[in-house]
Image (tube, rainbow, N blue to C red; front, side, top):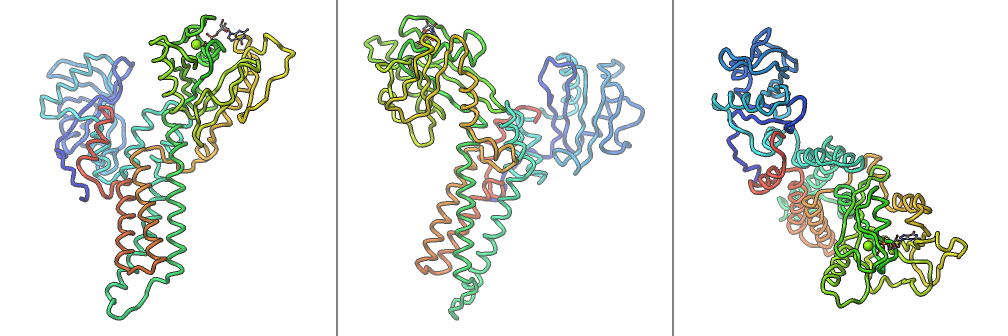
Amino acid sequence: MISSYIANDNDTIIAPATPAGGAICVIRLSGAKAIELCDKVFHGRKALKDAVAATLHYGFIKDGDEVIDDVVIGLFRSPHSYTGEDVVEISSHGSRYIVERIISLFRDMGVRMAEAGEFTRRAFLAGRMDLSQAEAVADIIAADSRASLTVAATQMRGAYSAELQELRDKLLHITSLLELELDFSEEDVEFADRTQLAELLNTLHDKVSSLARTFALGNALKHGVVVAIAGRPNVGKSTLLNIFAGEERAMVSDIAGTTRDTIESICNIDGVTYRFIDTAGMHATSDRLEKMGIERTEQALRKAHIILWVCENDVCNIISDLDGFIPNNEQKVFRIINKIDLNPNKPIELQNCPYPTLGISAKTGEGISTLIDNLSAAVDTSTAFNGDVIVSNQRHYEALHQAENSLSSAITALKNNTSADLMSEDIRQVIYHLGTITGEITSEDILKNIFSKFCIGK
Ligand code: GDP
Ligand code: MG
């Protein structure tokens, strides 16, 4: 199943690489005929075919005698280009009309519109990058915070690939020793020292499982840390959400049950995207709409990384059992005592509460900066900003998980003195799963699935 994807990889393809409406549009061409065909419509100081690679050229794009636009062309020659093919990047004025005219000139000469992600797919097929790096390109384009960008950039620049390659080399070394034993099986020899083998397998297992464990953080950094704001009606949840939103995003009133649906607001704190979700107040109700709202609150609570359980500074209203919701071990819960402006001298009620407690006033803003500091401290970004490899892709996580299982079974096989061939099979499985991450092992379906999610022109 080695790279069996067969696209029409010989055609020359074209697509705008920038969205419509900007001052300048970059139109990208890639393929064996890119330079030759561009010379037919580009009129500059010299023909592109005679120009040195990695240079810029000013001139006109003409349709017959008609000048369509003044352009600057970036010229790249195979294999030193993004796709590994000859690439021409035309920077024209950003008018939709100009872009359409230029593209249709090339289409008339037989150039095909690129599919989503096709430039990057070609880069992968040409060996310019491995699959995990190609996937990181899409993540970089989608990055909306310093943290999500850092995670994607580390992956795109190859730190992840290098770690996987190192693991793979060690595994290949083990299989080669084990297979040597198989060749000499009649003679009952052991080329692979069993103690060293056990050490190596354990080290690899720890490495793979620690990589897999980074996924929880990577996923939160990539898609945003989900913070559910929950509690009884009227405690000030929507007022708190509005602070993070910086506007009246959620309706605030003293009527219990004002918030019926969950409302989300995105906010960047210290380079990390947080998705605050305001929820309907938890309480027993017979109102059908409110009941639906409370169900959504429960859903929001389940997917939250952080829960802000809001209450008032009043013993009767202090709920330490989160109204029946049981957080999992990964979730961080804060009890937020709101409306401290109403009774400034009253000490904050700490009774019966297993969670860190903070006093705030969503009305006056008191305590909010401490709350923000706590939210920031709840997400450990030090590894990400340090450039450590953090897994943020579900597909990679699943492959790592499978690799981890196969390593466990190899370790068990070794403990039980199982024959070299069975152990070797487990290790081959590990190599296989790691290979799916970097794309050494892949299939048409996987590639289609990955690249179809890219934008056109990338
Ligand atoms: P929710 O039902 O939990 O979403 O609560 P709301 O945000 O709608 O607020 C309920 C009522 O409490 C409104 O009248 C708010 O103005 C008021 N309120 C919210 N936060 C504070 C606060 O910190 N201090 C005071 N004094 N009133 C607040
Ligand atoms: Mg509300």
